[in-house]
Amino acid sequence: MPDIPEQPREAAAVCPVTPPARIEIAMDPRAPKRAREFVRAAHCIEHNASVLDETALLVSELVTNAVRHGAPPIITEVECAGTDGMQVRVTDGSPQSPTVRTADFDAESGRGFTLVDLLSDAWGVEPTPAGKAVWFRLGE
Image (cartoon, rainbow, N blue to C red; front, side):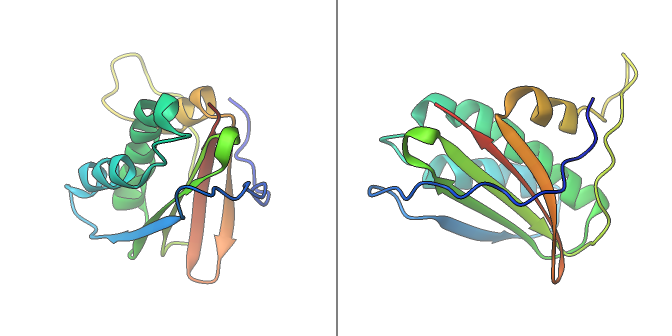
C-alpha cells in the first residue's frame, strides 16, 4: 500500500450537464448511507453512470472514516469531470491525516483506504483551513 498522497487534486473538466453538488452530513451512524444516497442523486447521468456503484462504495468508506476518526462538519462534494469521470471530496474538521493500515483477514474494519487505492484512478489528502479533505477520482 503506498503512502497517502498529499498533493492537490487535478483540475476537473467542466461538465455542461451537471453542476458540482455539496452536502453537509450529520456525524452519526447513518452518515455513510446519506452520503451514498447523495452521490446517487447528484451524479451526472450522462457521464458517471458506469462508475456510480464504485463511487457509492468509496464515499461510504470515506464518510465512515470521518465519522469514526474525524470531527464535524462532514462535507461531501461530487463533481462531474465529463468523460474523465467523477470526483468526490469528503472534508471533516480534524486536521489528523488518515492512517492507511493493513487489516487482518478476520478484521471487521480497516480496509477503506485499501479499497480507495485499488478502485480509484487517483486519490489524495489535502489540508483545509478547518481540517482535511480526502478526495478520489473514478474514470469512466
